[in-house]
Length: 294
Image (cartoon, rainbow, N blue to C red; front, top):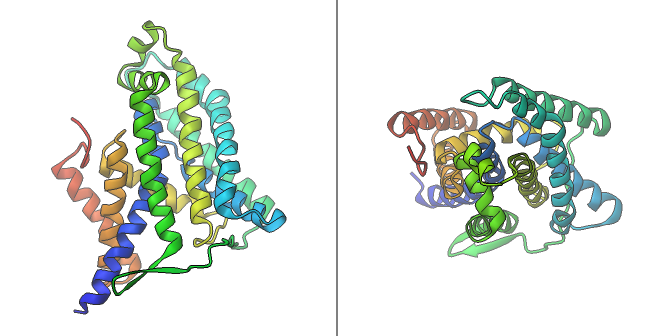
């Protein structure tokens, strides 16, 4: 066994896992508040990556700067999808004890619509945005670490910290937390639950919009890339604990680290299958996830 290669793979796995945790943050927030799975989460990531590509291709805007444009665009799109498409369905069936399965199918329909429109508009070609960062790697001891992945990983940590602080220290953040705990009690306290739902969905899409711009320089984008990230984000959220911000990062690091190390012993697709096995085992032992509450 080559310990240098194994250690190097583990470092890359941690960076990739932190990036996955950042992508899953928005899904975790939406899941924790609305109690529905946003199957279109990966599609919003794909749109943000295309935004970064076209802004760089047409106007020369660096993908990292395009995050300041993509985030408001994804927020507006997510806000509109929740207010116009999903919100009426939730209000009509709010008397149910759990959220309707029809809402989950509705987000799946949004995913199919967005992906197919993207395929029609952009075509099946794979594209990559180019960043202005010239330093391609940093040396961590004897290990060269990809600079772009380091930026994405640290941005995930910063975004998670900022979100946790905002949820705890602001009135709007406390309103979101109250709605997540009990929406009926929140409504009786004067909180506009429907407005909180719209805001939460938009905020979750804005965060994935930021991550889409940060990963665009080193991950090629195509209309079908969102599905893979959407599924992995769901696994990360459930593994880390539904609604837990720290859990999203921990779940992402666990999945990224496990797949990176396992890929040194088996083929990469097989390592992904093993990560699903790890996911099942952890949930059998701890159904609420690594950082979740009962």
